[in-house]
Image (cartoon, rainbow, N blue to C red; front, side):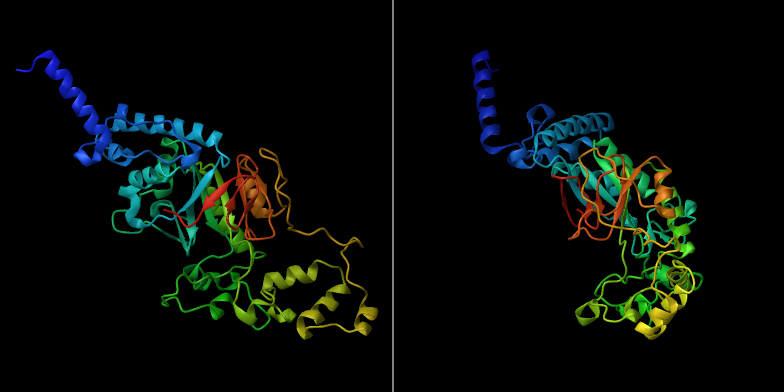
Length: 390
């Protein structure tokens, strides 16, 4: 038997061994008390060594696991509040097989200091809705046998909330995806240029290993507006922290084709886009615009005879979309007056048009703070984001 003094010596030696080698080197998992939850902005608010093993060991004990996640979430929020980057965001794209792995996926993001997730809920012609509740023209991501009722979006939002993370629903808007673009009942929805081509005629074959095929819709067509309204409404039922719309633009080409040199290169020759362009002015200016679309130019005599282009009220109409300066944190920016924007605003969330002329160049979003949205995300001043997702 050990004497008291012997026991004290053994405890001292064991403590030194743990300190010098670490729990992992000893083939053991550190208890919660042994882990320091005081995060440092200097370390990007990332988890200490041994935290991953500790969380993995707790997943078999739901109550302890949830309590630990809540403690970690509090520490992460405190660290971010002291950081120069109060928000660190990451894109996340889920697939049909990811459901059982959501705890591990969100644990990894949290351990790396992320406190906001941009969850891709409409991408590549697929939508993150359960097949049994999907009334949109996009195919459900979870479409394997037995997955008809699996709600990956709701599960991901719940996983983020349990860890104190914000989860935004990220959507491809006018880039509707190849599967949508080849539907016979959506052919007229695609944007079309003056050469009679759509983006499907210009981009690689869908079987090409280069990646996704992008099909761009005509934003003036009522069908895409209704389809996106349905998708957003279903998303808002799952109560994300905000809805972000990407690809608010037309197809981007490469090389010399990246520059529009004639009016026929513009994507305004679809039926609804053409009508919107012509009827924006009163007659006889409509005839002048028709000639411009048809022949690619107008002469001075035509302008003199038909009158200079102007709006119905005799004044130049305000632009329907424009850049805006990023508002102060918590500031409000009025939304663009489009049917799609009004559908989002009706939910009580605020919308801001894209506010950057550079990389963040083709999106707007809705969020509880009314912050600026763009192609790369919704970033108030001083925020950061990493792409792609984990």
